[in-house]
Length: 432
Image (cartoon, rainbow, N blue to C red; front, side, top):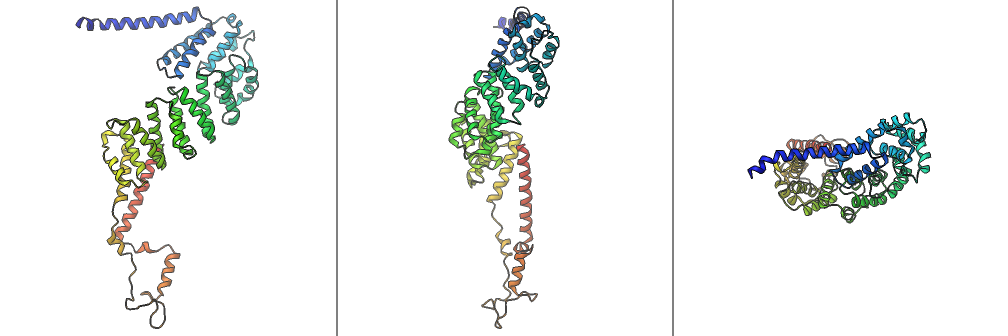
């Protein structure tokens, strides 16, 4: 055993050296043996793996982008006599490549092998001037629709017009994802289509896109963005989107991802006052993560307690909240728990009835059986005014029965309002 541990550093060193050598060999192969279009195929395969959740492929993606960048910059102009290499250079630029490399290629293109309309539109878009590229893109997308760059160009065009012409953007996204299903292009098209449909309250379309995304790309590194969109979608459309819809839409996701999404829903619903949705989502988390020693379970119980407060389940909410100590929760959850405990305390605290009795009007004419005295006149106040007139003045002016409250009770009410205002501000800050 000692010999094995003694040799371990040497073994690790050999492995690292082997990996570095392999990477170096791949780089040499890319530079010396492979034309750009073949390099691009490898890049596309790796990017599709990333979209499907292969985290180990992310580093390879960066490596390949660097090698392709160097190869394109050093390539002889004769390389671009093959249209496949021209397409490869354009797709590289639209796949996270260096825009400056496309500039270099355009400047060196004395033979006119690159379409100036396409390169001009791409360079404007990649430099943050997508609005200026709209017309060029609209003119060139139909022309290149059936070419290898077509789906990528449609994706770029959709991004350029999605704010001003969402319906047109959806058409571009639909076409791009249908031409390259299961790829990073489809992932990006679905994700951005969801952004449009949620923003524009397209409930039915959004449900279709969410289902497709959760089926095809549940492990994508961008799935967190989609989860945020889903929570936003439910916040605005819970009711038309039922609990059964939510269960069905999230069904394809792995349990750990599903749990995380339900937890986000529970938190947002608790802060927004959507108590039924909050109870449902928190209960789903507890169903998926029943172990009470886990942080996920504890936070779910907190949100369930928050949701139960307005529903009148004070006993259940109290039990849930009292079982959550500080060491079980993060800073934000502690503040929420403290706020919920304060609200619960205000709900169950008995009203000081002794003070309330002082708010009752004193009968100054206890010996008078009727509202009129023996002379038929109205009952009067100590100031000589008819009692009915004094009550009318209270109803019409700023003062009223509250002015007759015991000072201690008035202070209690004022203090309670200030604390509730502070809690509202705290929860609003947490939500941001």
